[in-house]
Image 1 (tube, one colour):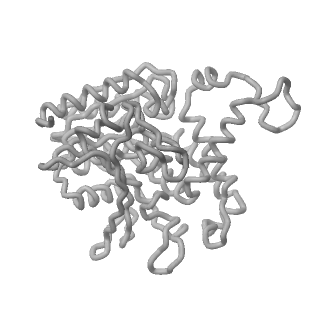
Image 2 (cartoon, helix red, strand yellow):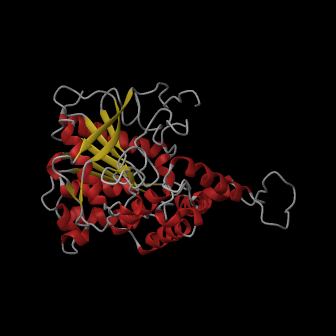
Image 3 (cartoon, helix red, strand yellow):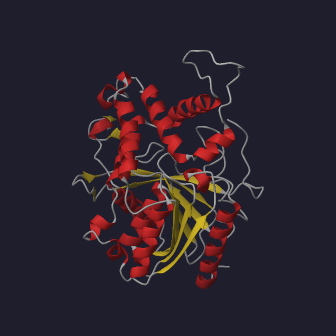
Length: 387
């Protein structure tokens, strides 16, 4: 494993890994109608919970993320996916806040999902794992927050699928949330995004090593299909400008084209690398389940088709953030949520960040984004009397 990576502020935030088990006495009823239990939740904490338990921030991760926000990832050895935001002196300042991030239900980094053992059969769940929703993920997170003895979260924050969870939190449990920050997200998944997910899922199920979802019991792994799924999805996380700036039409380790099908271009080599490293840390069936959960997400549909009704009389303070070059979750998607919040006189602010880095901008070094996040959290902390 590589040596520990420092956060942008120069020091690693204190962190701890935990597991909690729920549903032993009272199973969780999922949206699909199945009762799930017992199930485990793997989560990471950074910083210290204060005496009155009022400084907790829940970070909700995106599709291919996990609970490891900062410091070295235990599988890859690379820095955590939000190393630029979580740590002492950073926007999610671990000297001030107690930061919690849990691997989502259906995930593959310790929380119960299709790769885990079904206690009733003694074998991996595989496709016998029930289909889940974003709301199911949030219900599990609420069980965790209850377990930690936190009555009200100071903030719930997340980008992409994490932003969907933030919106679900604010709608389902508004009394448990002081502030909510959905980043590069939407209140429902678009037809285009569902289509991209279907391409990825079909790449996985077409891999002979998928074995009808039973690959773990057969000692196989659909690495080729999962790699292609990752490659296709990764393109949607970037912008044309970012791809051109980084790669253009530059050749990979050669001066002329080969007139063959090796990776002649740097961008091809980059995508193949993304695919090959992804399969080291992610489970193919988890990819199917989590993308399907995103596809099913439609907050307005849960409230008679009226998005504003999802937030009626909400006490939550909102800050929505979008990025100009994000074509996966474009700015109009965030504006639709803002308009719904305005319709019910919610406390909401909205910032569109100028960036050519695409959807992944919230994971990258964007000073205006960091300043926006710090400003909003500082204002909320002053209102709540957090030192």
